[in-house]
Amino acid sequence: MPRIDWLGYVVLVAAMAAIYINGSGYALTIGMTIMIWSMLAIGLNVPLGLTGYYHMGIGAFFGLGAYGAGFMAVRLGQPLIVPLLVMPVIGAVISAAIGPIILRIRGLHFATATLAIGMIASDVMNNWVAVTGGPLGLAGIVRPAPMVFGPVTIDLSQNSGFYLLGCALTLALLIWFAWFRTTAFALVLRGIKSDDLQTRAFGYSTMRYKVGAFAISGAIAAAVGVYYAFFIQYISPEPFSFAASSFQAFVILAVGGIGSLWGPVLGATLITVLPEVLDLQPQVRVMTYGAILLVVIVFLPRGLASFGAYLRRAGRAPAREKVQPAPLEQPAK
Amino acid sequence: MQELVNGLAQGSVYSLTAMGLVLIFSVVRVPNFAHGEAVMFGGMLTLMSVTSFGLPLLPAILLGVVVATAFGLVLSVGVFSRVKDKSEIGQLMISMAIVVIVGAAAIQLWGDEARTVPGAPSMTFLVAGAYVPVTWAIIIAAALLAAIGLELFVRQTTAGRVMRAMSLRPDAAKLMGIPVDYYQAMAFAIGSGLAGLAGGLYVMAFPAQASMGHIMSLKSFVVIIFAGMGSISGAFFGGLLLGLVESFGGSFLSSGYTNSFGFVLLLAVLLLKPNGLFGGRSNA
Image (cartoon, rainbow over all chains, first blue to last red; front, side, top):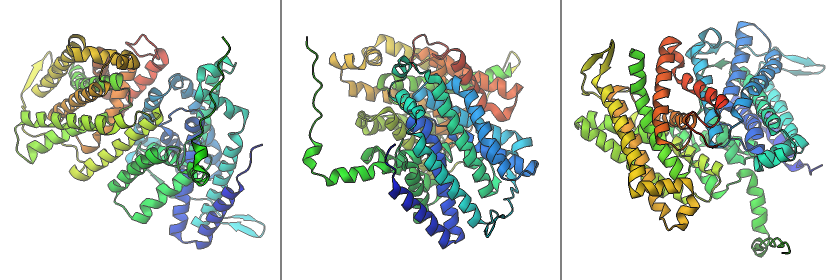
């Protein structure tokens, strides 16, 4: 069992509580936005961080969840819980169906194929008017009524109550990911990342694991989409375009630290808060994302999550850094 | 018949762009997702030179090509040659960052309406029941000439032979004393110049806009993947095929899904022939 990073959870829960106590609509909205991006980035972390597949189309599954939720809520009058349970399953099934086709390729080819999936999803959102409402989108997604647990009432129709639901989902997903990355399944995924052929030689049918990772990310992204749809209560194709969804999730994960546990949260916080603080125009905001990405790749290639390790290393005696690992012994001729 | 001509005209633009990308991708081996921005520069500068500076069309296109070439040189010398030590994902992230920065700057600078350049020749021929605007004929002819020219360049000239050597065995090429940095910059310049030409020709016949870069990048990657990496003629025919699929799909199935048809074709090709339609070797 690996060491549990209590400090991280304490800081996170404290920050969540601080936002809740502050209680202003603005703080809650920022908080929920950060949590949505954190969860999406965790979903992306499974294929990208653990397995090494450059998934550039997570926005398609995010949109799938949101539109599924919108359709069920607006056209079928279903409450939040139904899409929240159904859409992840649909997301996983669709990923598992596409997975075997596109997971045969990797690297840049895979990135392009997933980009293409994102584009197809955007086209469907804009054109399948009967279900998606086309460019106008779906309006009137109603949040559920207050839930009463004895003395405690959680009013999900209010931002404060809906915020708590987001906190619960985010914490659950973080704890799940902290556990998941120690499992044997995740170990095989890491094996695929470093050497697919070698892992196959060890007797693992890597395709099954890859499809599994892809399906997990599809399910998570769809669930986040459901939460997003009920958070924003109006969905249109624009937030699911490449630049607004897949790319941003990628930037967040890359800035936070690909493959790390806390990277998604750190990246989501930075990318959400910074433009708010600086109050930028939309195009300048996009440029800022690009600039942040460049700075991180150049100066902190393993993301913000590696910053602590970086500082620790810098704090120690620098001489030890320069010690090279002992060369491997040459086999006797 | 009309669909055939539409598809060939549109596809020729994809061909030009994809041929440029093939050259860059096989010689320099970087995931240059910013390639579409060179198309955008070609298109927008042609447009701006004609509308704002009153330049005639031909010099305007040439200016677009020059600027796109310069953009490619800047990318090569200023960016990609400095990040050779980064992992593939690092390079991909860098090119994505360039895409969003350049794309957003272009929208800031030029706005994002789709426009066609005014004053392009507007003659139209009637060939076998299909209307062929003369601009389309020019685009198709230019793409064909560029394909032949590029093929001759890589086969017949020393620089071309060097580039083929570099694409086959980069390390061996270096050991043979080839100044790889010089030829990588040259490949980048030629490839981006072709993309700029594609943009300049595109804006003559079809509306171009400042945000077109990333979709052009994506389509040229789609072309070189389903055509199979590393072949100029593959990229040429792949581009035409993509144009035809979009054109026929758009008019017989649904015009709203025009972009999707090419992507569905890509997925179908990956399912049936993971190495690409014209590719024999493994490239995954």
